[in-house]
Image (tube, rainbow, N blue to C red):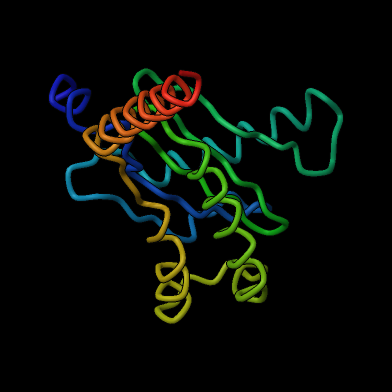
Length: 169
């Protein structure tokens, strides 16, 4: 599986978690069909434990700005908002645009659903609302697109160099 992944995809986000900041309660979880299995409640508890540990260790009360954790071949990116934290589990080499997407989704969640997040709501309406935004973080980038972009870049560079050569003559 790992070899096939390396040859076909640059990255793939496999899980997205929404965790309430004060209680470490799992508010929402979504994953792709063949994602690595995970215990959702343990994962949410781990996020709470890590943030509490760092706050205690560095005597801080404000958000700690935890950005990422490497776990073997997986990377977990965090986007901590005022009320909830999004954790995205990624396989491969994530691209910077994914970080921007995560930040945008967190801002939208906090702007559109502040009461739901503050009260740690997990009713059917809230879950549908969370899903509508968080589903947009489960992305992947096929390797062939990246390779085509490289080839086009090389071709463009060659054409420009040739044009300069002709102009020089």
